[in-house]
Length: 290
Image (cartoon, rainbow, N blue to C red; front, side):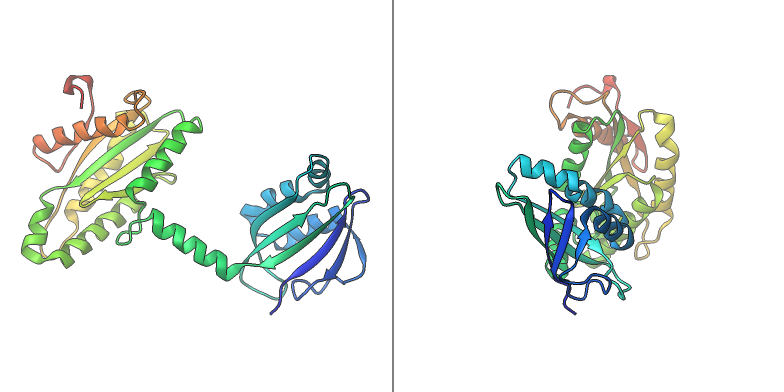
């Protein structure tokens, strides 16, 4: 199935002329002038994936094109998902428009990039996620948390977790059992936290969570109790495991050093381990600096 669409937009007069409509839509005919803004609105509302509708319209509405032409932008490009007529599944497309300087028209195309885009997304996923647990990796987690800070997030709870005596399961049952145990714990974490929580495998037998909007111990305690109970209840190749958790709060425990909140959580984690494991500990000033 050929989905390529080629067209020209008369920016001044708000008209669009199709040279080739491919199989994207049976309603569009080559060689006929259409009202551009009406076409764009119907095209987006009827076909484009919900999450990408606003972005596509903001980039390609007639006033945006006129502004881009005045400001001498050379091209506008936007990737999006749409469901071609007669197709039940969404596919990735790109819409691209070339804006010749000094002219009232622009030449554009809508191209099917589904296979290429899916490959790119898979590569991005692999680069940002832990292959075993499918949680974010350490680098992606730190980027996500730092982005939350930079975008004006007001508060949050930073939880650093360590599997107690994890070496024991590797030594007695083997690394395959250890891997299965980590996957089970990752599943418990993702199923026990509120929507919007950033969860990661921090490395080895360490996990990390950041819960936006939480800045009080009483908000977090029910979640931590549930996680610890589920981890301890689960069976890991005939063995039991438990978690220790250290918690620091943003912005209370974040200094100029952007990684300081994680270091405070690490201090609290050490105290949780010291107190007998299978527990959580909130950082306080009496624990000292890291």
